[in-house]
Each structure stands twice: as C-alpha cells, then as structure tokens.
Length: 320
Image 1 (cartoon, helix red, strand yellow):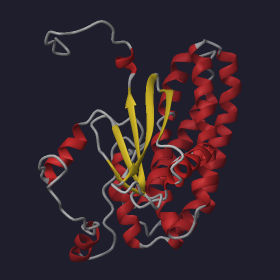
Image 2 (cartoon, rainbow, N blue to C red):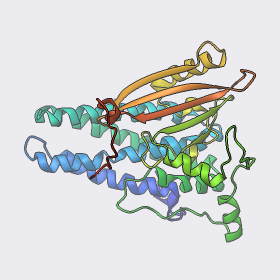
Image 3 (cartoon, rainbow, N blue to C red):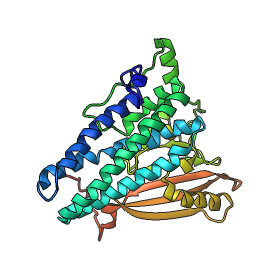
C-alpha cells in the first residue's frame, strides 16, 4: 500500500491500525524465518505464540470490516478472504500439533509455507482490500468500525485510540449515538423487566445467544462474560450467511430453509474448540400463529457439564 496515500489517516483509524499490525507481523515473520524449531525450540515457541494473536486481526476483519464492506455492496472479502483466513488457521493448528508432538523437523518445513501464506495475504490487503475499503466506506462507517473493534482485540501491545473522524464534536456525538430505536416494552409473558435488567440477564447467562430475524439478518447477540465465539457490533444488521466461515455457509442456509418451510425446528452440533467441548444449537422462532420469525443460535461450553456424575445436594462454592 502506498505510504503517501495513508499519511492522512488519523491515529486510531482502522486501516492505520491494520498497517501498524502489518509492521509487527513483518518483523515477527522475519524472526520466525531465522529461527529453527529443532535448534531453538523455546524461542520458536514464544514467537509462534505471538504469531497466533493474528487471530484477533482475522476476527476483527470478519466481524467489523467485512460487514461494512457488504453494506456498501462489496461481498468478495467475506467469501474469498475469509476462506484464506481459515486456511491459515488450519495451517497454524497443524504446526501447533506437530510442535506438541516434538516433530520439530516437520514444524520447520510447515512454517515456511505458513509464512508465505501470511505474506501473500498482507500483500492482498495492502494492494486491494484496504485501498478499496478507503474508497467505498464513509467516515461514519470507519467511526462505527473503530467503536466495535475493542470486542475483538488487536495484535498491538496497547489498544489504539478510538477513531472519532474529522468531524466536530457535535457531529461525532451524533454519529456515535445513532443507534436503532426499539420499543421499550417491559411487560413480558410472565412478569416485568426493565431494559437494564434485560441487559444484565443476557450478560449473566453462561451461554452465547444470537438472534437472526425472518429476513436472515442478525439483530441481536448477548455480551456474556466469557464468549465462546467472537462477536462484535459490526454483525448487527448483517446477513447471517456472511457471519460464518464460507465452508459452513451451506449448512447454515440449509438450516434456515428447513426452519422457514416448517420441516424442522431444531438443529444441534458439538465440536472441540480450543480444547473445550462446545454445544451449538439452533432453534426456529415462531409466533402464536406458527409463522416463522427467525432463528436463535445458542452456543455453550459444556466441558465441565459433561463430567458431572452422581449428585450434589449440599452448597459448595467454587474455588473453596
């Protein structure tokens, strides 16, 4: 990417942040190229752990940058580049597995391919993705993108400042506070809850919830203390097919179709993710007239639940 064309970017601008990360990545990849796992496994191990924080960069692009590109009519990155991310993720998983098995010669062989893939990705970002993003996204888009990035994280040692654009204070406040207006009902089927109580309830639930409406757009997710899968504000209003890796989109669309036509009401999966057993369930949402109104996706870490046996009838505080 032409440095002269990015000099105007204010500190905290999402693209400026990506470019800072690119600089970090280039230095990190150079060190990895010069370090052999079989010769200095501890140094290599530390460097590889640092490299795996690239996941923050991938997630940030997938959940913040890509949704806004879609809103401006560019869907390519959500499909092609996300697949590229998944390929690199799989390569890192294979290297990690080989390293844990002390297959250092294999690690040295595989890391060269991974490094080349990341370098190619950054080249595409800097020559195609970022320049086009800067040309089609508006100032309010970048402000909103920056606002939601804290939920996904960065590769940088310290968080960048929130990007507020080049607007005056009044315009900035208007942009940041431009949220959808929802009817503030407090009377539910059973009992009453304030808006604050509803938010607290969803934040406290030990499960991830995402609600997709009848138009296949994400309209809600809860912000639990420990999320299973990353989410950020950029997915609100996004077509759900763009919120999943390309390799799983076919399954998601099949679920939506079966639910919409009334052929099915529930779909369940369980996967091993980061050493934990994750239970994923989809439920069709229908109103009193059985009309399809959307889908709830629920994800829960059931690793500890799976090991429960017998009974516990006495109070026992965890950590005591």
